[in-house]
Length: 162
Image (tube, rainbow, N blue to C red):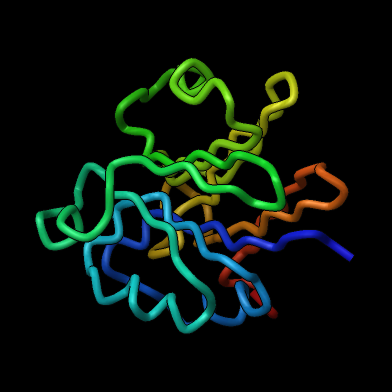
């Protein structure tokens, strides 16, 4: 049994598809890594679980007024940092210096789903959850922490069950 399940989402760009609610059902927290565009979507995500969100480079005042540019949260004793990522694009390893105490760093911006292990830190991009981008289907990710070890799996929002 995991100690924590967290839904990771980014780059909804004003398009919150219903598949997100099924894909993230059962998580205890939702982390949105920016480019929300519609602040009402953060309220909609609260129907799943409490939301921690940051603003992205295309977010206007309506989003920036309600969320910070970066955040750090505790997930089952691990520090999880959240930032959109345009601040360090294209060198995402700069996030390691920006968040030296983080065990997991969640970002968006590129719309490319990935999870890279750098030392003992996971750098995660859940992909773009809004519309298909750059040849990748819309996706989210699930962060699972079990016995202090984080793992990530991506969920394709266009596949059956996704």
